[in-house]
Image (cartoon, rainbow, N blue to C red; front, side, top):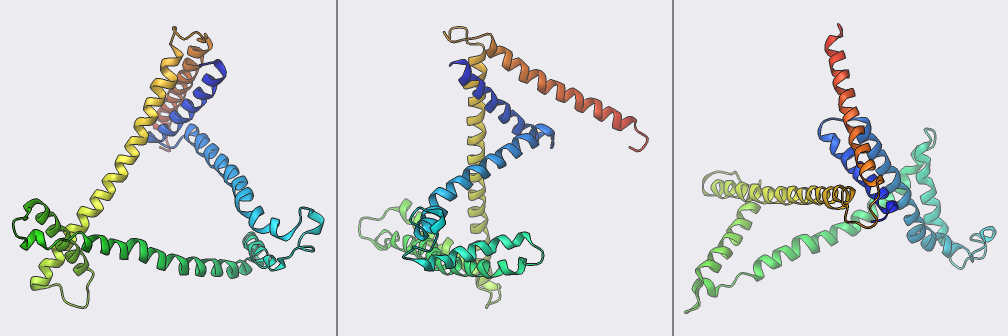
Length: 267
C-alpha cells in the first residue's frame, strides 16, 4: 500500500473510531464524523438527482440545449406543469407563501399512495397468501404411503399460525373461549415473527460492526507495522500513533472536565 492510499485509509479509520466514540457519549469527534457524512451524502445525492432525474426528465424535454430557449422551442411544453409544482415546494422556506407548497405535496402523496397501495397488496399480501396456500399439500396429511410427518408438521404450523395471527386482528368477535385461545396463540406467533425480524436486524448491524473491525485490523493497523511491505514508510506508524495520541488527549480532557464538574459548587 502506497502512502497516499494509506493516508486515505487512515482517514477512514479515524472516522470509524469517531463514529464508535458515540458508544461512550455524544462528543466533538462523533459530531464531526456525523456532519461530514451528512454533508457528503447530501452533495452526492444532489448531483445524482440532477443528472438522473431532474435534467433528463424535465429540462431536457423543455429545451434543445440552449438555456435561453428554455420551453420556447419545446415540443412538450406541458412539462412546465410538474416544473411549476416542483418550484412551489421551495415556498416552504417562506413563512408568507409556505401554504402554496401544500398543493404539490398533496398531489405527490395522493399519487404515491395510489401507486403504493395496489403494489403492496400484490407483493406483500396476495403473494404471501398464495405462497402459504400453494405449499400446503393435503396428501401429506391424508396421502397413501407418502405421509411425511416432518413436512406435515411444518405445514400445519404455517396454516394454524397464519389463521391464529389473523384471528387476533378480528375485533368484531369477543376474544373469549376457543376463539380467545386462538387469538392468544396468534399473539405468540406475532411475537415470534417480530423477534425474528429484530434478530435479523441485530445480526445485520453486528455484521457491519465486524466488517469495520476487520477493516481497522487488516487494512489499517497491520499495514502501519508491516515491515515486509516494500512501500512501507515511517509515516505509516506515525499516522497511527498520531490518531492514538489524539484519542488519548480527548479522554484526558473528558476526565479533567468531569473532575471540574464534580468540584464545582453548582454541580
